[in-house]
Image 1 (cartoon, rainbow, N blue to C red):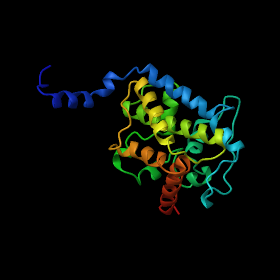
Image 2 (cartoon, rainbow, N blue to C red; image 1 turned 90 degrees about the horizontal axis):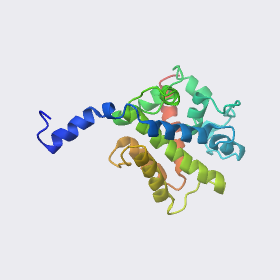
Image 3 (cartoon, helix red, strand yellow; image 1 turned 90 degrees about the vertical axis):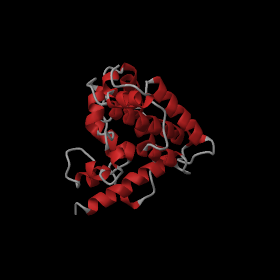
Image 4 (tube, rainbow, N blue to C red; image 1 turned 135 degrees about the horizontal axis):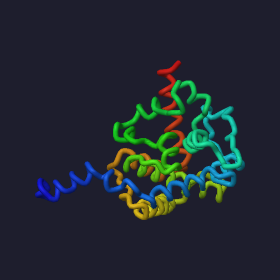
Length: 223
């Protein structure tokens, strides 16, 4: 191929055109749908968490509304906020159209790019094309959440055992590989968030605490 004389040239070409090679990633979309259903179904992880009253003991979450659900499960926007455990009324004060963009803007540019959002999950669930990076970031978020939420529900505790982080990484990496995506990489600013949270004493609590701290900062800009 003209202009691709070195290994570096080939890698650069593939990176720049990766969407062309992943337009119809059936496995990735199906994996996300399955993980989303596991989280949001009427008998899913989010409502199981709520029933067990497993919540972060932080003042910002006091008075948070219960998750609303219907026959099909939890609505995407409500489920999205519940995964991050962000208070809906507080997020509404950011004056966005079902978006947490002001929160994400507090983070590294590589984290902001293609960050999982309500629009992205809607498009994936309806089979519409989204970018390679957007799909991968949703896969990372949902594999992380389903692993730690399942453990929390089974043990009725957010605490992690010594070997749980490695089990989580193995689970996440296997799901990524099976869907045709690269493994977690600690040098990736987005992936680093999940490495950091998973190695804490209470991974899901730590992960959610991060977003609530960022929400507090964002609300300071929207008095």
